[in-house]
Length: 491
Picture 1 (cartoon, one colour):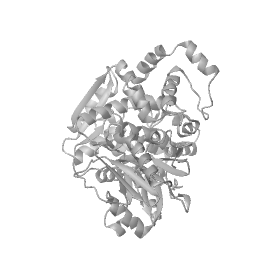
Picture 2 (cartoon, helix red, strand yellow):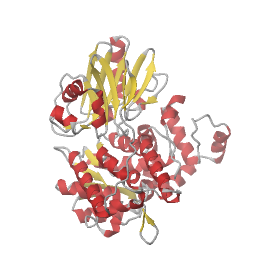
Picture 3 (cartoon, rainbow, N blue to C red):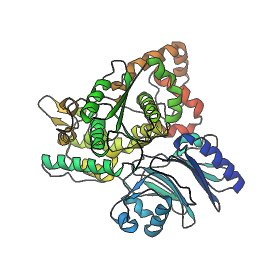
Picture 4 (spheres, helix red, strand yellow):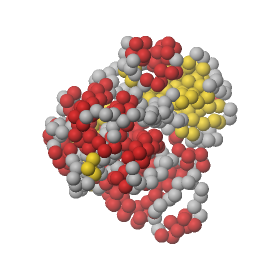
């Protein structure tokens, strides 16, 4: 809901000028209003995206990107489960202290004055971004890397599941738990998955405004669409793809089944490549699979924005929770599969979650990721692997228990549709690769390979990835930025 930025240290006039520069670079994250607050040697600000009713500006001591959802002690102290107002958040933390972050189950990045000291925090999974760096004795922080470029000597990713105070340094408040495997029966596991999904979607619906779902026709986004359609009268669904792309007819089938207001956008290869520069600038990565998926994500979010949608629901996280990746079937044991799933969840803030946040917020749309509700994550991690990769007599079917949970809620063709990567289903992969290969000569690529700089262990694999890197390096120069970029290994 916001682009946040701030500075600790230095003269007031200098802080005010720097803060304005940083917020200018984040305007897409909150075009509806801008707020700046100055407390002693700390200045914080936000660009506000109004997604839920009217907005009133008032003096606060906290800026938040996202929502804070809590339960148990949070609800006891505040009387609310969903915290949206900065004054509520400040009051709650003054009562309960930073340990309350342990009970938050949503995506958020937060900066506030806590007992006269700057406090920064990020959600457990890194659904919302936050970066920081030091420059001339000052600490600067912001929602995106671009806000810090040229202002600090090094740019670092704020670690998910941590909070920071100058007097305490970084404190981890969350790590993935060692969850004992549930011994519930198949029907009870499926019922529990469905109940937790319903609860997660319901809690994330805005009170007002049009609601959209980015619908690929795969099981994850289709489940989300089915749950939203039960709670919202004719939600909007959006699908994008090249001509003859596989996602388009499957998404259309889901939309007709659910009775949504459905919008399809058929694009050309040339149009996709025209947006590569914008996508890399907003994505802040040059990882080839991530850029490919981001292109489709960026363009479909652009269409949603044209229809006045401010909130979209997405199916990100389903693959990591329920075993949706084909390479998992090649691992040697259930223990290895579980370790791989947790590792992908740990790295999501530099891959899929980064794409979802950046591509939607680039279009001033707030994404909601129901699969990443903390209670749902913990339960999903307790489900034995054989319920995720299940032998149905015709090989291993991925995400079997999720499919089982929603039988009868979607067409059978969707329930048992095989996993496709976003860029594969939308038809963008081969087309983009072919076009970009014509833009980079063999000689240019060979010169780069012979003189390739140290990319922090990142290996440029082909012309397409080199093309993305060449664009990235112009907007984000400096070695430290490379440490924020993760490389997808299983492509």
